[in-house]
Length: 262
Image (spheres, rainbow, N blue to C red):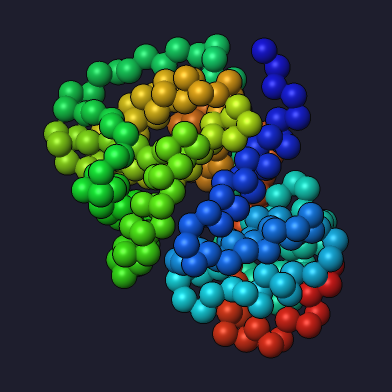
């Protein structure tokens, strides 16, 4: 089955995922047809900008938490990258949008001995999930309380936002989430604890989570780095677009954002 408007599906899902954090306490957003921005400590994310200004987002950007990131996608204004650079943003990373029709796939586990995957339901499970997430992405440990409270709230939206933890010989090894939107599942926050890598655990984890996703969705999307792209291709994902991610190094100088017109 051919998936129509593949690039749009991947981009819109990413936007909806990050803007979903507005349902958590003490989050601040700009959510218009021109700008999509969410500050939900420790996250600061821009995931779209059209043809107007980016000042409203920068004005509410938290001075705490992670480095603000702005994700420039296929439908963002063509001048957005240049405007971001003028306002203290620098290139941070490139993401590759990928998609597959999962109803036609059967994911056969390789049977890694000692590995199991389970849905996160308890605070104890969530604490383990956060530890893997922080270690895998090498995030500051001081952000652990913020991550814990933020994802604890998201867990309450059980049908739409689900966390899964991979265990290897009962030790937390792989973390990730499924976010469902309009019949499409999105893989987010996928990472393996650094001391658990090169054991095939991430592949086993993904096969199990994708099998779960099939129960609620017809397609699945993700956003990979160039290093992770080959692993996802082996599972049947195809690349359909790219995203340029910028980091804001001028967070303390927000008074200098008067030239942000696109």
